[in-house]
Image (cartoon, rainbow, N blue to C red; front, side, top):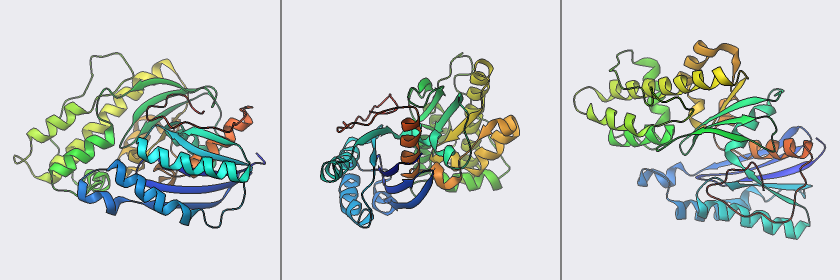
Amino acid sequence: MGYRILAIETSCDETAVACLNGDKVVQSKVFSQIDLHEAFGGVLPEAAARRHLEVLPVLLKDVAKPDLIAVTAGPGLLPALLTGVSVALGLSRGWQVPVMGINHVVAHVAAAALERRIELPVLGLVVSGGHTSFYLIEKWSDPKVLGWTYDDAAGECLDKVGRALGMKYPAGAEIDNLALTIKERVTMPLPLKNEDSFNFSFSGLKTAALKYKGKISNEVLAASLMEAVVNHLLDRIEKVLKKYPYPLVVGGGVSASKFLRQRMHEHFGERVIFPSAQLSTDNADMVAVYAALLLQEGIVPGSCVTPDPNMEQGWC
């Protein structure tokens, strides 16, 4: 891993840049746009792209010429992806260095490799505001999707209910704290309990939660929703582990939840691997290390990247 890799992440509302030298991150910067999107109760794609364009030159100001530029090509919001990819392509042309497009959802799984050795094969579970997906990773260059959400992602469900309860966007951290401190619960349904698949569905939990609005305290309602979301995740994990008895790496913003981590460790022990909370949310460190892992497998970077909001392959 002797490459010097510059990584850029602009899939949603975080602008991030990182530099990986060999196996060590020597520079990492993340600029949050939460203050910008709080007024909308969610991410406004065009506003996110404009902010990325304003912030990237500042984050890249002191960056030296790398051997490779790795940039998030998808999945994500198209205007945001276009901004990051356009900047990466411009730098690639100017510096005459190759560029590699990275799937930032799979990169959430690869993030764990920055903190410990990951032996393949592994299962990957990404739980975030925009994605809830299972992966089978036998090769980093060929991740296989095993399951996905039919509707809302886990974080999206929490944010939508949080907004209805008057919480600030994003609501995940506040709901997580309530789940840890409030012991009272109301029972909510277990989604897809009769479906023998590895898929998810959270829209029904959102509907079930909102039926309780005004009938119980907002605090109990939020804690009960978090419990139901985690129960759904545990149920799906049990199913996938029966078929694929591999270690499970869990990443994505929602996976930073202390309540979720506590429950998963109770159920699955050391079989579950989490990156640190800082590496679980969107960052460029994970994009850089995923690119390094791809290089180790012999992937040869090119000179062109196309943004893809629905990207399924690990790289391009």
